[in-house]
Image (cartoon, rainbow, N blue to C red; front, side, top):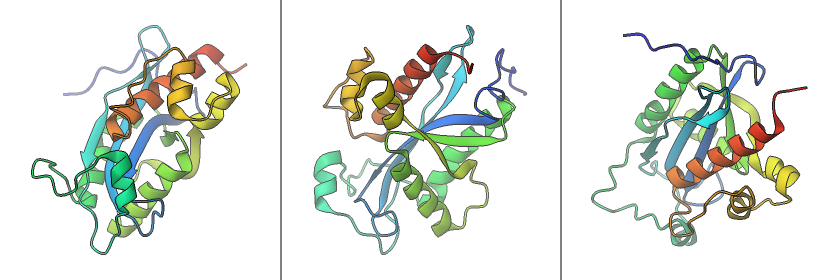
Length: 205
């Protein structure tokens, strides 16, 4: 059964790219050495009023790949227990498939050519995403390999803030420290921040 086409497809708004907010939680800062532990993604689409809105969030816990390292200090920040019996983690290939399939559908639904990663410090998220893609030899990555949209830059321009929590609060949104450093929560708040800033800016002049 085919989906109802959007009233306002996004193909003309960002040069044919579909913004997709991504957040990863990891076992450290080196994408070629430390494990990918969580990933979440949320397509950005126009609502019925032609305003950018956060789409459905897709997420997965990830099994650390063989030979990867996990810095205990990173786990202290994220609170992730990689050995938790109910973590329901997927291998990297399966986790990427779980994220990429709905992203590709959103790209097609909005008549776009591919997705562009939106992130807070987007190069970090894209680095871990690309490293996982390379490790499993994934051939259907919908994301642009190097271009991103970074909410650090946008928030610095709009509110004079670069830290995600402070930028979210400056935008008039809510922030819960107890839920932070979860891929789903950080994706949701980053997506809301992105929509708030771009909607306030308006269409390209």
